[in-house]
Image (cartoon, rainbow over all chains, first blue to last red; front, side):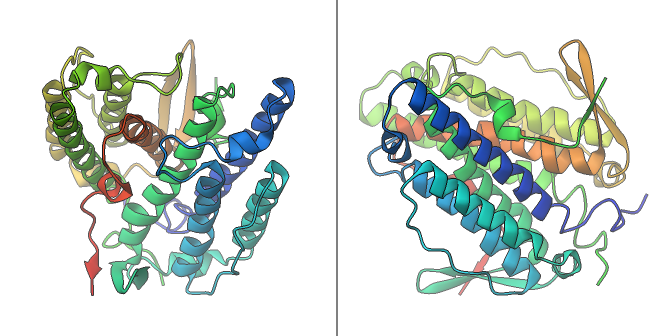
Length: 178
Length: 178
């Protein structure tokens, strides 16, 4: 059986994945907010928490997850992404950044990403540049980077005692249960 | 431009992704071993470390990452995966489990997974069953679950002081640098 656009495409393997993951991350922020309120914890403590002194804190993990989704999808579509400042100080502001990211993803035409499998993608790497075919970029750079930061954000909340489970991370996926 | 088998396929989006991720995980285990030796830490302390008392420890995260790759790829290919016991007690044994998983992945015919995009995949969910189209299963269940456990394994080592960075997690990807 030959894979066709109707069931396997660069777009379906990217934008809807980010949408589900970012919506799940937004819901994790709601649980973090409720936890901070229930335990009388200053939410800033959660936002600045990290797993090791030289690791990025929670807020930065969320910002990078958003930017991987935004900039990576734009790179695949061959368009310029809107720049976002990294200035979020509250859970509400992080949720707003996720919402802005989701709104941008909605503007991307599926056909632009579907045409990117063989296109060369260029990635800034300090003074050098990385070059990958679009499909390789999606499978081996963009998705692992997105999940790395999204999972680490989850792990920081979990390590901080927020009552969440893997299902909260996986989010609302297209699965029928019987 | 139409996506074709030559540049975008269910197989390329799954088995090579797991191979790169599992090889990276195996190299992380080497760094954990070296760290334990340098700091005179019993490696068992690292293997049983967890980020919160009711989370799975490091060893279980590695076992599950292996099983997602093994069982998920088998499910997509429509074949029965070999069962692995969960009895690893040392870093060497965990590396052997990763090697066994990689050896199994090598036996899977690409064409069997490439034909799975529209096939219904059934997943055991306790007493119930989940049903997804193959492409949805890969994008929204298998990859996020694999990365969730692989990243959490990384995060546990990082939290334990092992000197690793994101590049160690991303692994040997097909990127040209200039």
